[in-house]
Amino acid sequence: MAESTNESRVRRHKRTRKKVFGSPDRLRLSVFRSLNHIYAQIIDDSRGHTIVTASSLDKEFKNEKSHKGNIKTAKMVGALIAKRALEKGLKKIVFDRSGYLYHGSIKALAEASREAGLEF
Image 1 (cartoon, rainbow, N blue to C red):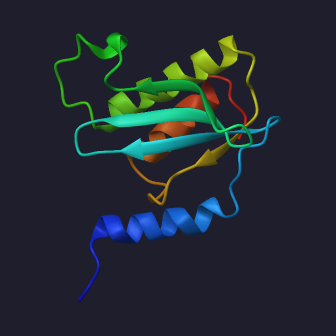
Image 2 (image 1 turned 135 degrees about the horizontal axis):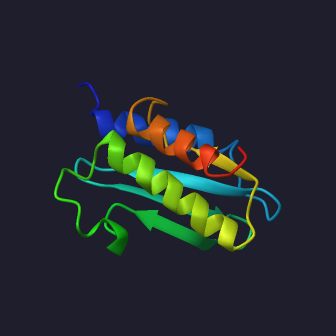
């Protein structure tokens, strides 16, 4: 029987996590996308701590009436996580797309965070 789309994504994510590791000098920007929201967090894998988070559920997006899983919201989340990271003094990161294709909202989040000042 064929595996589901999410099972395939999780399998791709496990495969890429063997190579993508967030060290203290280059932390990992991990992205998760659901049908309704998008989440991003910057993680220090050596300590196992999340340093910065941003999602479409944050208070900055409370007044948004539109669907929050789209490209427009992903751009705003990318800019928000970059702003929060720069406030903490983080500039260089490793991008972890979590098995998703680099397309649509994942690409929009990555490009918005690059434009806001993060270096991949």
